[in-house]
Image: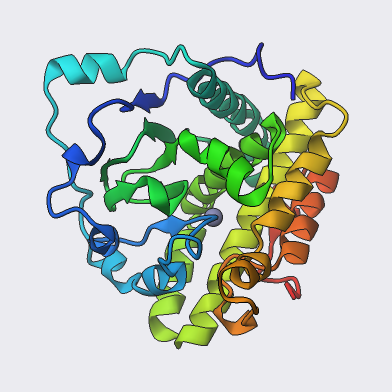
Length: 299
Ligand SMILES: [Zn+2]
């Protein structure tokens, strides 16, 4: 992907090097479910945390109230506002900036809604999110309460070592997928799904989660198509990289890797084939409306 000329986003908060676990008293994975749903992505199983359980715990969201505010001194605040200078940080800020430039234009055209950008927090080890503690082991996620994407940039390395997925477009796809969750939040979809999940059993609740995840994949595809149309940003092999990523991190593959067999009812992100198909649906059409995974037979 030709990303070097992308506008760097002003909405990146760089918390890397702030001492890992320092920011979350009580720490531990148990801190995850505090106060709100976290849209957990990508590597739940690998770390032994079951995202289905967490997402199923969404009832707390409705009564969750305001996100937790973090107290930081002015010096830390100033440092967080500085644009990242390292490769991974520059890359993340550039991709986020490009998602802003693209969605700012196409969301109003396609849905009549203005695009208000998501924030992005870069961290290492652990940090505090509006949805509770963030830990690197959770993989990238979006917190709808503070409207921020949380990304430990070492995750890109992990994609390569654990899943054999590499290439800048594969990483961009991960960021675009998280931005997709933000758009779902902005369109009111996350809220609706969460209320339906409250009334549903575990199996039905997982199915709803799958549709949310596949829609985020599709929205990543919509971004990729429009980014390429406007900025000529794709290079040969990029789409294959995204497909490789989608294929490697489908629930069926992850489950097979961790337990040797796949259990469809427990899927919350969708199978590899579904994830690839929905990314391509968004990529081919470039249209947000093509991503209605709830209406489509998403199976
Ligand atoms: Zn997701």
